[in-house]
Image (tube, rainbow, N blue to C red; front, side, top):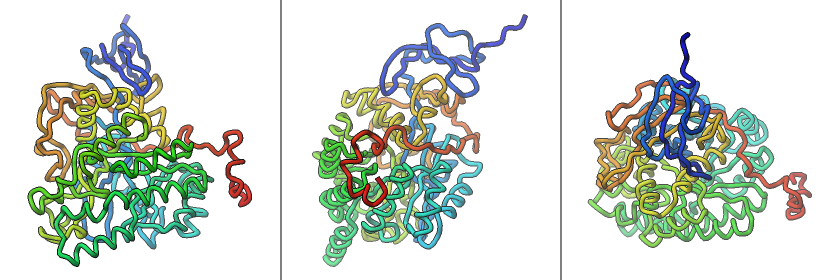
Length: 493
């Protein structure tokens, strides 16, 4: 009698970490889903020996930009093929980039365009955030609620950039919809008028080198906008997530709100842990390789971000991958190789290096625990954006998105070894002590470090419709209505 294997795949001798636990077990996988966790599981049709190495949930990069359209002629180097390939090689198995509404256009048009850009390309699973730039009555009353119901349950608004920013009144309008529909609002918090004033004065004085980008976006500019975004969210008692927080001033605003019990969440990125404002000044124009907004701060602010990561201020650690090539007339040099800092596209690549950097300098250096690493890079993003429990953990019934980690003596990051389509990494030469040995998405190996294997199965990645965020809405909790009588008076309590 022929005996069929109990599982499609078994990973043996895994040292597993979730956001809550660490334990040793075998992992049984069937039809791309985790079917069993235990000691001495029955045979699999295929078997992998983790040999006591850490096996962690695949990363969820909840803030990255791929093939995003522009009106200024810039072109992103990574599309959904190269970007998701790079993600997999760095241990990320789910990405959430942005469908950008153009002013005068609709969100439906943005979503349709982004699906067309993704079609047949991703090798990892993906969802979409929305970017709202033109909140017309039709968008607020009909279009946005319908899209939220269809699985686009998070969106981003900007307080800076002329082509994207919303004023306070329009932000309030958007937050009202988010509250009613139980969606998550992400906010890029920098004061546009302050930035414009500082930039104009610097350029009048000939201060145009990349290093002056940091001085045009000083910490108080981020602090003020963070405070304002929090205030608007508190007025409507609706959650917001402040993205790419760069330093102490904004962190203090977020911590104070969290202590008040406000539903305020926060994200930071590798550039605020591993780059400083000095990197903008090195090598003349090459400083634009580290030019992003908010800019990297000084070493003291770096230390503040590390402390906040460990203490629970941040729920999300994302790449904010913005893949503009350096030596490219459609990238960083769109205005020439001596352009003033305000004419250089903002953003840096980081999809592939996000997890190795944090694991190496966070977990292996004792700055954060491995469970905190899992929480920041997988579990909390999945919860905040409605993908949990399918994504973000290692649990029976969840997708078998798994990363087996190699650790080793320090080795430098080299762009030539990365898999994105960008011609540089801002982390060139920085040493890491860990890298994914194997990345599996729904039980399929996408990356194998020992052989250099990278899957070319373009289009295997599935589009994910997001649920409402898990347990992040407080309006229904007993007694909370009494705290906001103005909302009840307006009929939105």
